[in-house]
Length: 291
Image (cartoon, rainbow, N blue to C red; front, side):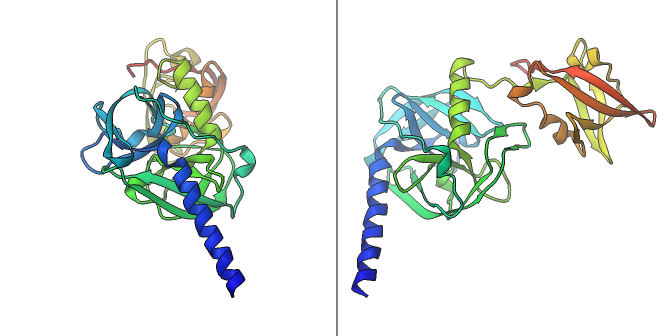
């Protein structure tokens, strides 16, 4: 019994030490009218948080002890629910875990802060580690990651860490209405690099179509002049039934094929026109910044 107790005490101490070790890199983020979120340093002057929690351009971060500072939004990608903030007071960034840390059953911790600067943590395991997937906005997520732990509202934007204190991903309730998920480290690193290289935005594929879901596909309600769709020969009234080899059930299925990697690529579009099948090829453009 004493041996069992000692093992539990050791585990408890190790978990608490890991939380303490990453605590300085975790902040509260205040940029909305209701419940705020958390964030963490990914570079000495950059904090990563959940994009859906930024309801205002006026952003304040709260560190340990209630110390506050202004932050500037320097990049946003709603499709992966990631946003970058720049702050003047440098922090110590967290280390990212390697891909092999994504193992079902691995013990993980989520660490967050509230608006008073107080620390919060919750522990669980990785319950699901799946293949890559696309969000309804077309964001490319490298792995489907779902932790089995309690993620309270303040935990959106918080880091999910392994027992060594390395970042496995960012926790968010903004990618699914039904469950909290984790954006994996590999996606974070890719999006951060792209945001910094592309002036704070992620390129998105563009066809120039107005669509509405119908039984068996998405009907074309409008085609923008001189757009990739017009050049490919799409017409108002066409019903898109497949794109990029994937069956289309509604307009979201079309948008899901227009992620950052689709820009400049040729994509096949299968339509029904007047009841007859027709295949078209379009070269995907980049969505205008104002669109």
